View 1: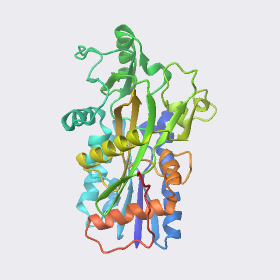
View 2 (view 1 turned 135 degrees about the horizontal axis):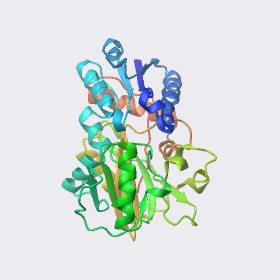
View 3 (view 1 turned 135 degrees about the vertical axis):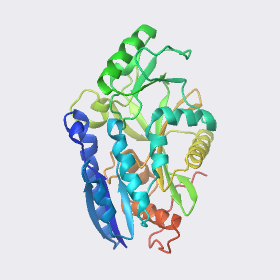
Length: 343
């Protein structure tokens, strides 16, 4: 197959911030995917998409588009625009539709859908201004996050508020910095797991969860932006990835919950669920549709693939096979992807 790999590059606004590196990382992912496709005997080409070249997507000629557009935050409308263009083409593309991308990028929409679908999540409230009244009864501490950012943007050790006054002060500061609604939710102190999910010919299966391990000296353990992205920062050395330690019962419950959420949110091809477990109670923190892909085992997705004996080329083949099957294509994978057995 001839496959176009499209990816978003940082906007002018993003390049003025430290957070641009989360979009720059997508460039490396696109190149890594291209190498994997070559090993799978597909021809491919990469198409970097800037805020000024979105319309160029209309001119792509390919059998399939591997979609790595992931603008978020104040740049989310650009991702919506790009997906509107994709929808006009008669070319299958990987990952979710525009609606599902927005539903899983905007934490306000996502939390409302969690409530509607009966998916357990921490008590939360969206503040559309820093003066909006408190309508929820929280058990402190709480954590504050910008609603439409990804990759832990805006999450620092200072994102935790220990009382209502502290929350108000941090809400004002975060709202001023990010200029968007802010999510406030109860901080769940339990273990954190990231669970990749693959779809194969309509069948939804999970890969082995990856546990996020925190330095036990951290009072409020969380995966901060600096801990995820900035080697050398004090937060970076305080977290690492590990195989999960879930017993059979918890593993089955996690699997059931993730498959349920994948189905109800109408996700496609692949996704990642982030959750915490406290006293055997599951709390889904968020869903990542079209999560970052790379063959680096420091990526949560790739760590789980390695644990499940799924190589990076097998992962990419699984995604393109799923997208082709969904669109009625006759393409058959030459590589069998043996997803992890939960039994």
